[in-house]
Image 1 (cartoon, one colour):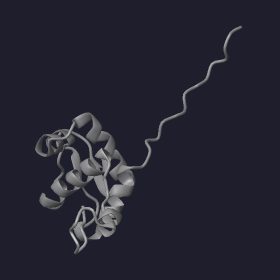
Image 2 (image 1 turned 60 degrees about the horizontal axis):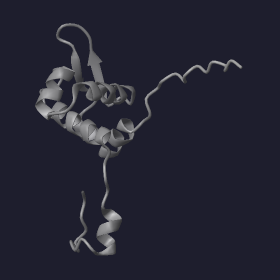
Image 3 (image 1 turned 45 degrees about the vertical axis):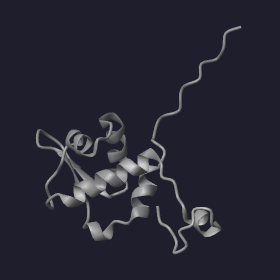
Image 4 (image 1 turned 180 degrees about the vertical axis):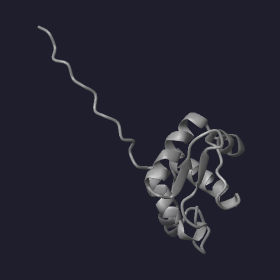
Amino acid sequence: MIAPANRNAGSPEYAAVRMALSHSSTYALHATLLLAKSPPGISISCKQLAREGQMPERFLIQILRRLVRAHILRSTFGVTGGYYLARPPRQISLDDIVAAADLPTSRKPARRTPRRP
């Protein structure tokens, strides 16, 4: 949370700047930060990211896929597969990460079956 110079929590300026992040955004930011701290070009598995960041792996995999689609991360397959930053950390903004993390998942709409009389 970013706070203005007047740090009185009751002030209107403080309320205007205060921002709540979704769980998706928080996990995306945390995972991206962990990847930014790792050596360039070294991929880290979702399992390792989840363990190091104390995040639920099943939820994190969905978030990482969104970050890959947004060209923030790249993924590699295989035994040594994982994720790494698609570009230098200085070229990735917080807004990019939050926007990608909060994208809706691409699911096919459920098929409707007609009701029988």
